[in-house]
Image (cartoon, rainbow, N blue to C red; front, side, top):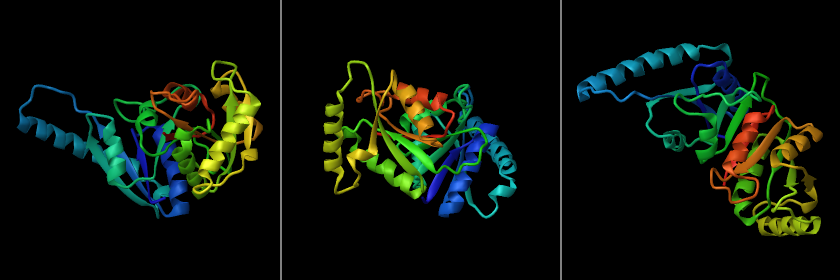
Amino acid sequence: MKNIIIPVDFSIHSENALKAAVEIAKKHQSTVTIVHMIEFQEVHLSQEEKSEESRYFMELTQKRLDKFLNKEYLKGVAIQTVVKNYKAFSELNQVAKEHHADLIVMGSHGSSGIQEVVIGSTTEKVVRTSNIPVLVIKGDKKFAPRQGVLACDFKLESKDVFIKAMNLFKVLQIHISLVYVNLPSSSFLSTNQIHHQIEEFSNILKDAYQFSPEEVTIFSDFSVESGVFHFAEKKQADIIGIPTHGRKGLAHFFSGSIVESMVNHSSLPVITFRI
């Protein structure tokens, strides 16, 4: 865990994310990269005027960011800041790539709804587009998860993201309970079919990541969201992990809209992994 990205908008929600990122960074000697993005309005100015305006707002924002980061709990942590004028959301991905980041940490309202934490955009968009895992923090509770839940469909296209997720949870020292949510819909599978699918998945992964099919709980519910939440409650989990296909839902419960809904309504921290 070399570098952790935290987009901030100076709100209490982004400070909650910062505190969680610092907890992780202290355990793994990670660098914390704090990003604030400014969207300049398109106005009819000359290039010289635009350059001057841009420089003024960059300097103003940097001063505000320095004040925001004047906190006791940041002492001893390697901190770097990035202030950027952005035009497209892929630029946060670019920042993560440039800084070789392993994780993005963001804050949200919790069950009452998603909080915007990057000006002009939302947590959902980061979850949907990020090429690296995104950890969404709820509230100001100290981030120290020990028990987690990872939902998976155990299909071939989920192989790489499953390995990525399990390896990250291992680094974070979080014990994971695996779950397959079976739905009463067109995607319904019999118990034998699910067991066969999980066994095939396990066999395919055996050289890269070994796990026993018996470790997977088959949990029936009316929606993936409720199934994962109910299973997490049963396991007394303190974090939820789930892959996402973004907007293009290739699997029956990893479509972007469902994952975004889970991020929105979960009372627990949620970490997403893009397939």
